[in-house]
Amino acid sequence: MKNRSALALIFTTVFIDLLGFGILIPILPTFATKELHVDENAVGIAIAVYSLVQFFFNSLLGGLSDKHGRKPVIVICLLLNAMGYFIFAFTKSYAILIVSRVIGGIGGSSIGVAQAYIADVTTKEDRSKGMGMIGAAFGLGFVFGPLIGGLLSKFGYTVTGLASAGFSFLAFIVTMILLPESNINREQAQIRKRKLFDVAAVKKIFRKKDLGLLVTLFFVLTFSVANIYGTFALLGYEVYHFTDLQNGYMYGVLGISGAIVQGSMIRIINKYIRETKIVVAGSFFMMIGLALLPYGGNFFGLAIVIIIMSLGTGLLQPTLLSLISEVASESEQGAVLGINQSFSAFARVLGPLWGGFAFEFIGYQFPFFTGALFTFFIVLLSIFYLPKAIKADTGEEL
Image (cartoon, rainbow, N blue to C red; front, top):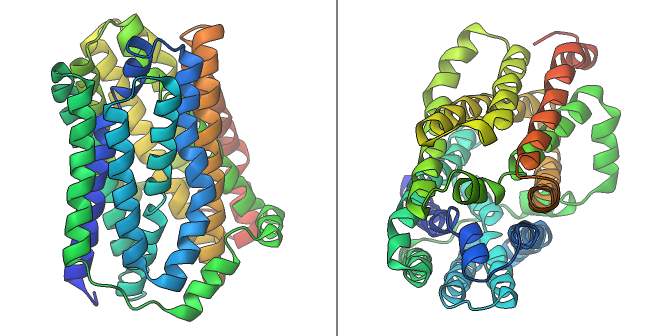
């Protein structure tokens, strides 16, 4: 790689920042219900607002980074993250919670800029490895962040919020002092900018059976998982009577099991099983896990269910992304993956909105049933349609 030290620093920055984000995952829903006395639907809105802001600001910040450089945008976003968490630490009303989520959503929109930074400092051959570092930082942040959040929750929500702000501020300091600016490839930056919301490119993708189907499947996957973003912690608190610490442990189980599947198991499985078969298996395990989440019985039973679900998501998510990349031509990679990311962001808005509404007005089981039902559609499509669609467009069956 052209710049290992820069890669190590951007990995460290993203990891530290995501620790702060992960700390709030298990406690934000219970904080909103216990301290602010809002209903589950309002919790879903608070979580969806974060993704909605990112949906709009991802492209804006990407364009600003093309023009003014990656480092200034990343630095400002890290400071905004710290501000959002600081406001959360002293939140006494739902309106202020929404303000903190909006500010945090703007700050969290820098992940795309971090990916662009990696593209700037890596060769074409090493780019996938560099992008994998962002995924690893996400995984580690989601493993250790909720565990830290659960442990700190016994000291109060203010301490937990200040800890999140502290991690993001530390990432801000490290980035501002140590991270070098990248050498932006202006030609590639312009290509990325032109294609971020290219309606013609969207139509072109959906005219191809394989790409259109794969992007749709990834949207359904993201929506199914996003249904439980806020409701999973509420399930632990209201149904299983978990403490915030126990919820943190449960999120830790979710993160660790997912990391094991994506970090090692899938490489072995890929050697012996076709990717379309992995999609079938992954969606089946994910469907079973989602459907059983309300019926784990106790902490250990729920942990087993979570491992089953993590096996499914750990197999399904990277395999679908790999298939999307494989069936897209070299010249379409940026546009296709960018459009897929936009659809995924929209799914992360819809999922928490429906999940919170269903939890409150229909029944606590229904966010999980909804995810299982939509995942069942992935099972059916991946068995009866996906292999034929890929074979029709590529001339070979994967």
